[in-house]
Amino acid sequence: MQVMDKQKFNTAEYNFAFLDEGSKREIRRKTLKAVAIPGYQVPFGSRELPIGRGWGTGGLQLTLSLIGQTDIVKVIDQGSDDSVNAVSIRRLIEETSHIQTTENSREATIIQSRHRIPEERLQDGQILVLQVPEPEPLRQVEAREEITKIQHGEMNYSGIWLTLYESIVKWGAVTRGADYPVLVHERYIMAPSPIPRWDNPKFHQASHLTLLGAGREKKIYAIPPYTNVRSLQFDDYPFEVESFPGLSCRHCGAEESFMDEITDGVTGQTIYQCSDTDYCNRRREQSGEGNS
Image (cartoon, rainbow, N blue to C red; front, side, top):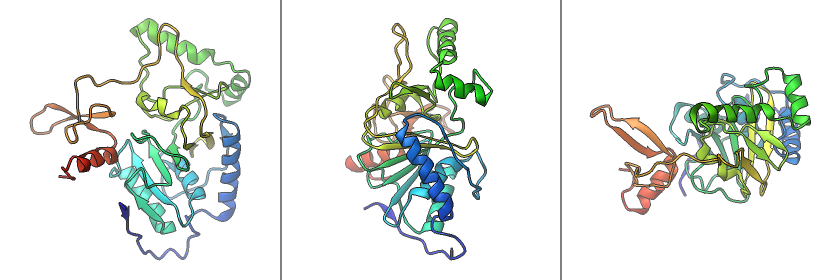
């Protein structure tokens, strides 16, 4: 099993998983409410953590309040297990809980992610925690919190539809890439976090639980398993994901994954590789190439 060894640290001055039990209970209660009302933003008392707000504190508080001794946690940033953000958060979880962590999406019981959903479909019993910088999908058209609450209550989402329409008028297509709004359970329009459009379809009727946390904005919201989630679209301008026609990953040869565009520092050429490093590494192992 591809699981990292537990590290032994002197953390006697910390509670298990850093947060005190009272804070965990409060976050769990708000999480249960979010699960009961899919797509609804539930305010919560965001706690201070030893990382800056805006660097994943909302998702991290969800993870720390949910993990137990038997959990296995995976942390990724834009698909990568090795980015600074992912490594720092994973180390904090390890040092304050001593639970197992992994880079394998299949083995993890909790996956905390920034800007991506793992390429392979998650399974029943797994929890996906997404870090969210701006949870309010109406914020770009309405700055006042008290007004956006009324608009959600009245299902008045004309402002969002107007921004999509203006994009079509100006550019001939909806040009919005990441954080493309979705309608959850035919009720609330929700910001899915800055994941690419490629990942939006993975929400619909997913067998796993998705939790979204915004520490700076103090909001938690959720998509329960087997919930209808659809990206906003017009009849004559249907929603489309990114496409990479004729391109393949330079490492594993995949043609059906979301790819990062990279400029080779030596040749100056544009090359492509899988955003999801675990997915890419597994394909290479299956083909006998290993991690070379």
